[in-house]
Length: 254
Image (cartoon, rainbow, N blue to C red; front, side):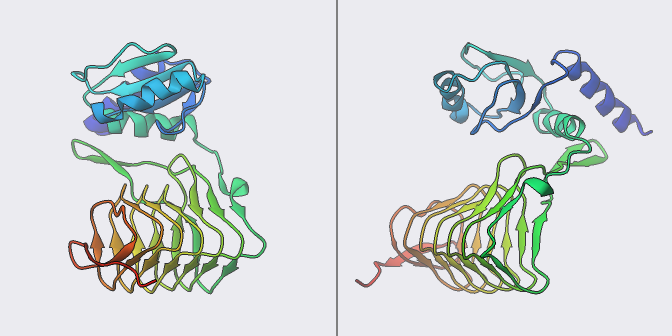
Protein backbone atom coordinates (compact mmCIF):
# COMPACT_ATOMS: atom_id res chain seq x y z
CA UNK A 1 0.00 0.00 0.00
CA UNK A 2 1.35 3.44 -0.91
CA UNK A 3 1.87 6.08 1.76
CA UNK A 4 -1.02 8.08 0.32
CA UNK A 5 -3.40 5.11 0.48
CA UNK A 6 -2.37 4.40 4.07
CA UNK A 7 -3.00 8.03 5.00
CA UNK A 8 -6.43 7.96 3.35
CA UNK A 9 -7.32 4.78 5.24
CA UNK A 10 -6.30 6.42 8.50
CA UNK A 11 -8.31 9.52 7.61
CA UNK A 12 -11.42 7.40 7.03
CA UNK A 13 -10.96 5.40 10.24
CA UNK A 14 -10.59 8.59 12.29
CA UNK A 15 -13.84 9.90 10.80
CA UNK A 16 -15.70 6.62 11.32
CA UNK A 17 -14.72 6.74 14.99
CA UNK A 18 -16.68 10.01 15.27
CA UNK A 19 -19.76 8.89 13.33
CA UNK A 20 -22.32 6.23 14.36
CA UNK A 21 -21.90 3.03 12.36
CA UNK A 22 -25.44 3.11 10.91
CA UNK A 23 -25.02 6.53 9.28
CA UNK A 24 -25.43 6.68 5.51
CA UNK A 25 -24.95 9.40 2.87
CA UNK A 26 -27.21 12.27 1.81
CA UNK A 27 -26.92 15.46 -0.18
CA UNK A 28 -27.18 18.90 1.38
CA UNK A 29 -30.16 19.62 -0.90
CA UNK A 30 -32.09 16.53 0.23
CA UNK A 31 -30.96 15.82 3.80
CA UNK A 32 -32.07 12.76 5.76
CA UNK A 33 -31.85 11.63 9.34
CA UNK A 34 -28.70 9.77 10.41
CA UNK A 35 -26.57 10.79 7.45
CA UNK A 36 -23.28 12.36 6.43
CA UNK A 37 -23.08 15.19 3.92
CA UNK A 38 -20.64 18.00 3.12
CA UNK A 39 -20.45 21.76 2.63
CA UNK A 40 -17.58 23.70 1.04
CA UNK A 41 -18.84 27.28 0.98
CA UNK A 42 -20.91 29.72 3.05
CA UNK A 43 -23.25 30.24 0.09
CA UNK A 44 -24.91 26.94 0.98
CA UNK A 45 -25.51 27.77 4.66
CA UNK A 46 -29.23 28.28 4.01
CA UNK A 47 -29.47 24.54 3.42
CA UNK A 48 -28.41 23.99 7.03
CA UNK A 49 -31.26 26.13 8.33
CA UNK A 50 -33.64 24.29 6.00
CA UNK A 51 -32.75 21.04 7.76
CA UNK A 52 -34.32 22.37 10.95
CA UNK A 53 -37.51 23.36 9.14
CA UNK A 54 -37.69 19.89 7.61
CA UNK A 55 -37.24 18.21 10.98
CA UNK A 56 -34.02 16.49 9.93
CA UNK A 57 -31.73 15.45 12.77
CA UNK A 58 -28.49 13.60 13.43
CA UNK A 59 -26.57 14.90 10.41
CA UNK A 60 -22.77 15.14 10.29
CA UNK A 61 -21.54 17.78 7.84
CA UNK A 62 -17.95 17.59 6.59
CA UNK A 63 -16.65 21.17 6.27
CA UNK A 64 -13.37 23.08 5.73
CA UNK A 65 -11.39 24.06 8.85
CA UNK A 66 -11.89 27.83 8.69
CA UNK A 67 -15.48 28.06 7.48
CA UNK A 68 -17.63 30.09 9.91
CA UNK A 69 -20.88 28.23 10.45
CA UNK A 70 -23.91 28.72 12.71
CA UNK A 71 -24.90 26.29 15.44
CA UNK A 72 -27.78 24.28 14.01
CA UNK A 73 -29.89 21.86 16.03
CA UNK A 74 -29.28 18.26 14.98
CA UNK A 75 -26.15 19.12 12.95
CA UNK A 76 -22.57 18.24 13.88
CA UNK A 77 -19.59 19.63 11.96
CA UNK A 78 -16.49 17.61 11.17
CA UNK A 79 -13.63 19.83 10.01
CA UNK A 80 -10.95 18.72 7.57
CA UNK A 81 -8.79 20.14 4.80
CA UNK A 82 -9.90 17.25 2.59
CA UNK A 83 -13.68 17.71 2.36
CA UNK A 84 -14.26 16.10 -1.04
CA UNK A 85 -11.83 13.28 -0.36
CA UNK A 86 -13.29 12.33 3.02
CA UNK A 87 -16.85 12.46 1.72
CA UNK A 88 -15.82 10.24 -1.20
CA UNK A 89 -14.08 7.74 1.06
CA UNK A 90 -17.05 7.54 3.43
CA UNK A 91 -19.54 7.23 0.57
CA UNK A 92 -17.62 4.35 -0.96
CA UNK A 93 -17.30 2.65 2.44
CA UNK A 94 -20.87 3.17 3.66
CA UNK A 95 -22.51 1.87 0.49
CA UNK A 96 -20.01 -0.75 -0.58
CA UNK A 97 -21.84 -3.68 -2.18
CA UNK A 98 -25.09 -1.74 -2.63
CA UNK A 99 -26.66 -2.19 -6.07
CA UNK A 100 -28.88 0.78 -7.03
CA UNK A 101 -30.12 -0.67 -10.33
CA UNK A 102 -33.23 -2.43 -8.95
CA UNK A 103 -34.43 0.93 -7.62
CA UNK A 104 -34.28 2.80 -10.94
CA UNK A 105 -37.70 3.92 -12.14
CA UNK A 106 -38.14 3.55 -15.89
CA UNK A 107 -41.63 3.88 -17.34
CA UNK A 108 -42.92 1.04 -19.51
CA UNK A 109 -43.51 3.59 -22.30
CA UNK A 110 -39.82 4.60 -22.49
CA UNK A 111 -38.07 3.83 -25.79
CA UNK A 112 -34.38 2.94 -25.56
CA UNK A 113 -32.62 2.85 -28.92
CA UNK A 114 -29.69 0.59 -29.76
CA UNK A 115 -26.65 1.11 -27.53
CA UNK A 116 -28.35 3.52 -25.10
CA UNK A 117 -26.69 3.32 -21.67
CA UNK A 118 -28.87 3.93 -18.62
CA UNK A 119 -27.19 4.27 -15.23
CA UNK A 120 -23.54 4.77 -16.14
CA UNK A 121 -21.34 6.27 -13.43
CA UNK A 122 -19.84 9.69 -13.97
CA UNK A 123 -16.18 10.52 -13.36
CA UNK A 124 -16.45 12.31 -10.01
CA UNK A 125 -12.89 12.12 -8.70
CA UNK A 126 -11.27 13.13 -5.42
CA UNK A 127 -7.50 13.56 -5.40
CA UNK A 128 -4.95 13.04 -2.65
CA UNK A 129 -1.23 13.32 -3.38
CA UNK A 130 -0.55 10.79 -6.16
CA UNK A 131 -3.85 8.93 -5.69
CA UNK A 132 -7.25 9.43 -7.31
CA UNK A 133 -10.47 8.03 -5.86
CA UNK A 134 -13.66 7.56 -7.88
CA UNK A 135 -16.85 8.63 -6.10
CA UNK A 136 -19.17 5.68 -6.63
CA UNK A 137 -22.65 6.65 -7.81
CA UNK A 138 -25.58 5.12 -5.96
CA UNK A 139 -28.45 7.43 -6.94
CA UNK A 140 -31.35 6.36 -9.14
CA UNK A 141 -32.26 7.01 -12.75
CA UNK A 142 -35.89 8.10 -13.27
CA UNK A 143 -37.25 8.10 -16.84
CA UNK A 144 -40.87 9.24 -16.97
CA UNK A 145 -43.57 8.37 -19.50
CA UNK A 146 -42.86 8.55 -23.23
CA UNK A 147 -39.18 9.41 -22.92
CA UNK A 148 -36.98 8.48 -25.88
CA UNK A 149 -33.24 7.81 -25.48
CA UNK A 150 -31.36 7.58 -28.77
CA UNK A 151 -28.62 5.29 -30.01
CA UNK A 152 -25.43 5.38 -27.92
CA UNK A 153 -26.77 8.11 -25.65
CA UNK A 154 -25.73 7.96 -21.99
CA UNK A 155 -27.84 8.80 -18.93
CA UNK A 156 -25.65 8.80 -15.82
CA UNK A 157 -27.16 7.75 -12.53
CA UNK A 158 -27.21 10.23 -9.67
CA UNK A 159 -24.26 10.54 -7.34
CA UNK A 160 -26.62 10.54 -4.36
CA UNK A 161 -29.97 11.96 -5.50
CA UNK A 162 -31.84 11.00 -8.68
CA UNK A 163 -31.10 11.79 -12.31
CA UNK A 164 -34.55 12.57 -13.75
CA UNK A 165 -35.80 12.87 -17.34
CA UNK A 166 -39.32 14.26 -17.52
CA UNK A 167 -42.35 13.06 -19.44
CA UNK A 168 -42.19 13.30 -23.24
CA UNK A 169 -38.53 14.36 -23.42
CA UNK A 170 -36.56 13.21 -26.48
CA UNK A 171 -32.82 12.59 -26.20
CA UNK A 172 -31.11 12.00 -29.52
CA UNK A 173 -28.13 9.83 -30.42
CA UNK A 174 -24.73 10.39 -28.77
CA UNK A 175 -26.05 12.73 -26.09
CA UNK A 176 -24.85 12.65 -22.47
CA UNK A 177 -26.93 13.56 -19.43
CA UNK A 178 -24.72 13.98 -16.36
CA UNK A 179 -25.33 12.68 -12.87
CA UNK A 180 -27.99 14.39 -10.70
CA UNK A 181 -29.35 16.35 -13.65
CA UNK A 182 -33.11 17.00 -13.67
CA UNK A 183 -34.71 17.56 -17.07
CA UNK A 184 -38.30 18.76 -17.35
CA UNK A 185 -41.11 17.65 -19.65
CA UNK A 186 -41.20 17.74 -23.46
CA UNK A 187 -37.58 18.80 -23.91
CA UNK A 188 -35.45 17.95 -26.94
CA UNK A 189 -31.74 17.18 -26.85
CA UNK A 190 -30.46 16.90 -30.41
CA UNK A 191 -27.44 14.90 -31.59
CA UNK A 192 -24.27 15.15 -29.46
CA UNK A 193 -25.65 17.69 -27.01
CA UNK A 194 -24.40 17.27 -23.47
CA UNK A 195 -25.46 18.28 -19.98
CA UNK A 196 -22.95 18.17 -17.14
CA UNK A 197 -23.89 16.98 -13.67
CA UNK A 198 -26.44 18.59 -11.35
CA UNK A 199 -27.93 20.86 -14.02
CA UNK A 200 -31.61 21.84 -13.90
CA UNK A 201 -33.44 22.00 -17.22
CA UNK A 202 -36.99 23.35 -17.40
CA UNK A 203 -39.90 22.27 -19.59
CA UNK A 204 -39.94 22.52 -23.40
CA UNK A 205 -36.22 23.34 -23.63
CA UNK A 206 -34.45 22.68 -26.94
CA UNK A 207 -30.71 21.99 -27.13
CA UNK A 208 -29.32 22.22 -30.66
CA UNK A 209 -26.74 19.87 -32.18
CA UNK A 210 -23.60 19.77 -30.06
CA UNK A 211 -24.84 22.28 -27.46
CA UNK A 212 -23.23 21.93 -24.02
CA UNK A 213 -24.54 22.87 -20.57
CA UNK A 214 -22.14 23.35 -17.65
CA UNK A 215 -22.65 21.60 -14.31
CA UNK A 216 -24.99 23.25 -11.79
CA UNK A 217 -26.45 25.53 -14.45
CA UNK A 218 -30.24 26.07 -14.60
CA UNK A 219 -32.25 26.69 -17.77
CA UNK A 220 -35.79 28.03 -17.51
CA UNK A 221 -38.84 26.81 -19.42
CA UNK A 222 -39.13 27.54 -23.15
CA UNK A 223 -35.47 28.27 -23.89
CA UNK A 224 -34.08 27.42 -27.34
CA UNK A 225 -30.31 26.89 -27.25
CA UNK A 226 -28.70 26.87 -30.68
CA UNK A 227 -26.25 24.49 -32.31
CA UNK A 228 -22.83 24.37 -30.66
CA UNK A 229 -23.73 26.80 -27.88
CA UNK A 230 -21.91 26.54 -24.54
CA UNK A 231 -24.14 27.43 -21.58
CA UNK A 232 -21.96 28.50 -18.63
CA UNK A 233 -24.50 30.61 -16.69
CA UNK A 234 -28.15 30.27 -15.76
CA UNK A 235 -30.75 31.08 -18.41
CA UNK A 236 -33.64 32.76 -16.61
CA UNK A 237 -35.83 34.09 -19.43
CA UNK A 238 -37.47 32.24 -22.34
CA UNK A 239 -35.97 33.00 -25.73
CA UNK A 240 -33.42 32.00 -28.34
CA UNK A 241 -29.80 31.66 -27.22
CA UNK A 242 -26.56 30.86 -29.06
CA UNK A 243 -22.79 31.25 -28.99
CA UNK A 244 -19.78 30.41 -26.83
CA UNK A 245 -20.31 31.59 -24.21
CA UNK A 246 -24.06 31.34 -24.76
CA UNK A 247 -25.94 34.66 -24.95
CA UNK A 248 -29.48 35.88 -25.54
CA UNK A 249 -30.37 36.56 -29.20
CA UNK A 250 -34.07 37.32 -29.33
CA UNK A 251 -37.45 36.40 -27.85
CA UNK A 252 -39.35 33.40 -29.10
CA UNK A 253 -41.91 34.13 -31.78
CA UNK A 254 -45.47 33.87 -30.52
